[in-house]
Image 1 (cartoon, one colour):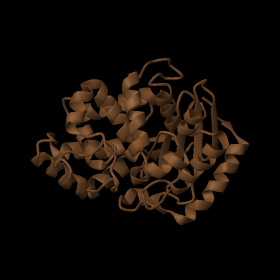
Image 2 (spheres, helix red, strand yellow):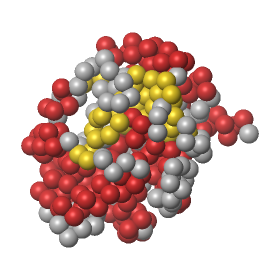
Image 3 (cartoon, helix red, strand yellow):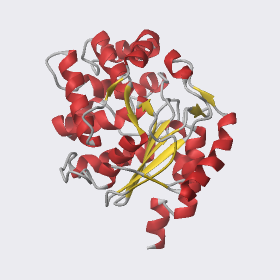
Length: 315
C-alpha cells in the first residue's frame, strides 16, 4: 500500500505542531524520553483501501496503552463478555490511568474498566498460551492480522525499560491478587504486559487497524472478519468513554470519535464505516495524550465534520 501525500492534511499537521512546545515527552519510562518532542505525523486509511498521509508517517513507535484495545478484543473473543467483565468493570474513571485509588474505594480489587492500567493488566493475564512466549506470539499473531503486516514485532529496548520501572503496575497486580481478581504470576504477566505495550508499528499500520474497527471487525484489505462485530462494538464504546484517559469526556465533545491514546504519543482514531486514523506525536499534555495529536484531530473533526454525535444529531 502506497499512501498519497495530502497537501491539506500537511497544512493541518503544521498548524497542530505549534502545540508541541506546550507538551512534554514521557520520561517515567526512560526509553520513551528519547523521542523527539516536535515530531507529528498522521495517516488516514479508508475503507476503500486508499490512504492519505502527512508528516513522517514511516516512523515506527510503540503502542503503549493503545494495545489495551487490541488485547481486550482478543480476550473477549476467547472468553466472552460474562467471563471478562466478571474480572474488570465497564465504567469510566475520572482518575489518571495509573491511579490505584478506585481499586480501594470502589468494589475493592476489581478495576473499573480495561483502559486503565489495573484493568489492562487483568485483561493481559487472560491471554491464552502455555508459556509467556506462547502468549506473546498469540497476541502478536492477532495484531499482525489486524494490520495485515507480518513484520510487526516489539521493541526490546522499550520493553526492558518499562519492565524495570513498572513498580506501580506491580503493586496493582499484588493488590488485585489479594482479592482474587488477578490470578496470574505477577512477573510473568508484567513481562508480557510490557512487551505488549512495546509492540511497534507505523501510523499506516495503526490507521489500518483503526479501519478494521471502523468496519465492525472486517479487514478492508483481506475481507477477513478479524474481530467479531459485537466485540468491535464493545471496544469502540470503551474508546469513547475511556480511551483518552481522564480527558475522554472533553475529547468526545471537541472531536467526537472513538479513539485510544498511548504515552508514546500514538493515537488510534475511528470514523465509523469510513476510515481509521493513525497519529504519532510524542509531546504529551498533562493527561498523557499527544498534545499536538489531539489538536490535529480537533482541526480534522471541525473541517470534515467527523463527530459521531454531530452526525446522529443532524440525521
